[in-house]
Image (tube, rainbow, N blue to C red; front, side, top):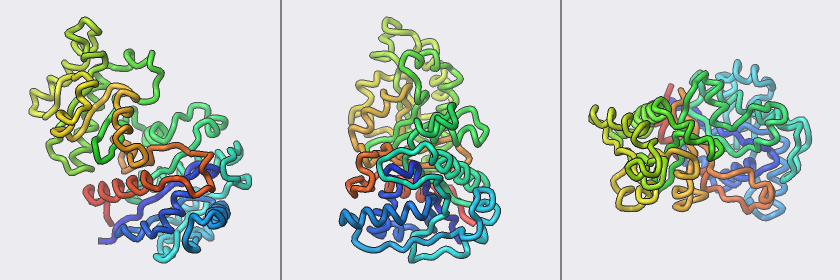
Length: 353
């Protein structure tokens, strides 16, 4: 079977996205995958970044950069001509779909005019994945503040791909070798979290986690532990009633159907080896409740996965690291793990042609 390629977006051009792609290519890590790997970037900026990393002695060899889309230069024409573009893929090169920046890229220095190029990457990646021309998307970090100047409602990769897929709910999951953690709510001020915890939100989260655990992780009967919202999971109502009135009634319905899922548990004891040893996925109620313990067990080696999309999307667990751009000191571990996860999920989902 001929496998569809994976697509990597390099994100904010002034950050470390291009660096970590080049450093992985230098280590010949892309050769470990039995499918094509395609990079979205400005090829001139990529060449410039390669030169800078070479001056830092961070690359051991001269990586051959190859522009796949010599004729098709706009997002629309790349998408329309993608099948033909793939015919020119070169196994011994770093294959790049060139999307031009408006301004010259300077490592570590944000340029507002280049935000449009970052959004173009995301739009093209979505279209290619949505219409199953690629097996999945792996995203390097972007800088929200720059993009919000031209798209004020932009909240991040996860929300962008959800809106483009015309969905009203997706689930952010982060995963490493220690645990997988999915979130009911994501980027909300803490004061807004309780009002966002509804029976409907809890049910949608569990449904998405169950479906993608089965279809993308090969777990037919996942074992799921769920955090309560309040300290001590509400202490029988003395420290809050969200567990009694909202969370547990939903979870009890799944238990009655035979799903291996807990009722709401105190988060301060759930994240211990005693419980994690017999758990496939943890569902946390809010961002820091779930991600603080997870990242303490493997920051830099953690992968961000968007569940509920009609395609595979994984990402690094770190930001643009502007202070590291062009220095060769950025870690490639999270990007490599994100590619491994995307490839494995694509194989399990049989996304082949």
